[in-house]
Length: 328
Image (cartoon, rainbow, N blue to C red; front, side):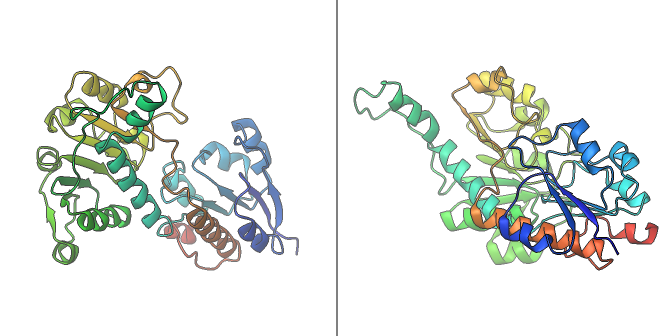
């Protein structure tokens, strides 16, 4: 029996790739930039399995040109770059990598909270530009995290890890999502709010931890920003399209909210002519929430285990569409 053909769209952790090599006919994209659409389609066309990242769109067009495709292992927690319904209809299994990056992404969220509250990036630029001429009691003053209120939108695994760290700092934590988590509320002293609006009107800092869906696209736009406190700061380490960036720009320029910190943007990379880049009261990092050596290695390991399990007809450790098994 010939070994299944697999295309890996980026060079990932060496140990993970080594675990694949004995079992599949492996093709790895070596470029720093991802394959363009034409290259991606061509290199996937005869494959049984793909190991993808958030940079690749896995849709009906890709599936049409890849008749042998049985498994797509997406090295990410979210699968908004994959047409799950179409994959399920065709019996194509989709893997994802939840869990291994939760604590790391939570740490990044807290880092952005500190950096924005204490104006760290702005202060660094202040020094480098030669503007630091003296000490003054009104210079570069920020806000305390301790004893302030953090509003979390989406208390999933990452949101909960953020809440735990925030409580350790001494923050009051409120949250909103469709389903309550009473055990976690009691264990970590979290407060449930019955609506998004209740969080926005109460929180000094708002942190987003929700998947991108048709319902959450531009969940935070002008009406929501207008609801927030004037001194509040918005943090997004979820997906860029959850926030309406044009509305955010207007809110930051007009003092509707005090600041923002984004690890994700609507277009990635963010265009250099985007007006948000000209504002002093926003931090933008290059989608690096899971960017630690340990977490990226863990994601790669889980992605390869998902891929091999799917190709062998075994149960994936983390499958986004187990219903596809019945259509395969």
